[in-house]
Amino acid sequence: RTLKIGLIPGDGIGREVIPAGRRILEALPSSLNLKFSFTHLDAGWETFQKQGVALPDKTVEVLKSDCDGALFGAVSSPTVQTKGYSSPIVALRKRLGLYANVRPVKSVGSGGKVGKVDMVIVRENTEDLYVKEEKTYTAADGSKVAEAIKRITEKASYNIAAMAGDIALRRQRVREAGAESIHSRPQVTVTHKSNVLSQTDGLFRETARRALAEQKYQSVKVEEQIVDSMVYKLFRQPADYDVIVAPNLYGDILSDGAAALVGSLGLVPSANVGTGFAIGEPCHGSAPDIEGKGIANPIATLRSTALMLEFMGEEEAAAVIYKAVDANLEEGRLLSPDLGGKATTEEVIEDVCKRL
Ligand code: NAI
Ligand code: MG
Image (cartoon, rainbow, N blue to C red; front, side, top):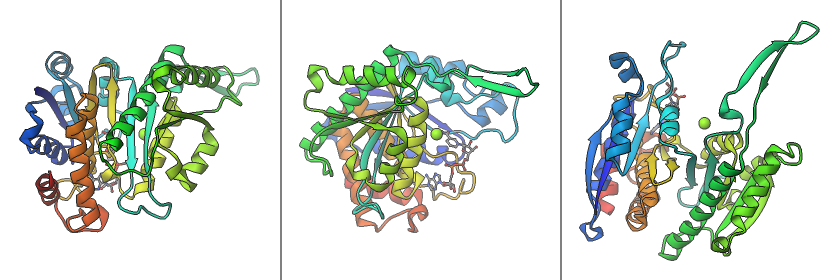
């Protein structure tokens, strides 16, 4: 099978880590029978400065018509409001219908203070308060009032819950195939605040429950957590969680919070997923403070590459990459400076590739 991958390095260390994704794909064992072809695509702040748009139409067209998946590095945002500039990753999610943001968070070795962590946060990515329908008006007493719409649909709630269920089942398959994990059975935690927002979050909760009650998720343990106590438990007993599903805003906050459990942003991958298409994306930004030094941690990108493969149905290839990354981290001999080591980006990539 030949897979066509779009590479969108973006800005800053995006350009130093996206090549790692390409390298690991090219280094996969030939027994997997996978071939890759790569297309370089523009997006980001530098693209904006050169072409006047942060996301050229060509990038979207090539992704739509000629790619099976893609890797996105990071982009720098202008520090002052710039006319005509808008975030290319937000636009990409919209234009490609990537309705889910999936963020696995896994600890190294025995984990930090809170012990081992191995969870995935599945965030709805198209609605909720982020529909950006806001208005400001003046109240009768002359003071200002601002309002925002929180829109929850049955359709999007259903789709995101089903995706969480599918991910829980897939994680179980990967575990059964030998991947080590702290979990022994699939579990999905539905997060909401329906005790207060009984209509919006109520619809999310109800719909998610209904989706996950379907026959194919029979083996998945489904539980619920109110979002505020979710935050508490996330930091007290993170090992209790396998897959967490949440509406957009709570998912955004939970996923950044969860990333803090494992030490460095340089470790945390994500994927933007729609029907039949996924873009792997490290969670970190363009890191101008370390740009050009050759010390950016490539692991978030390597894991994002594996995650992209999972959504392309290449679970075995993904597992091979996860294992190699875990082995590098566990041995701890070649770590980048963000993890307290001295290794360069190149040395980490080489070490992981050798372990494939
Ligand atoms: P950042 O994630 O770029 O950096 C935060 C800190 O983490 C820095 O000290 C950086 O050196 C470190 N770090 C991040 N990734 C690392 C890696 N792979 N290896 C080692 N250390 C790493 O966030 P920051 O500084 O807030 O933003 C910088 C720029 O990136 C801004 O222009 C921001 O708008 C943009 N950004 C873009 C994102 C995206 O494209 N998805 C996400 C977050 C920020
Ligand atoms: Mg965020």
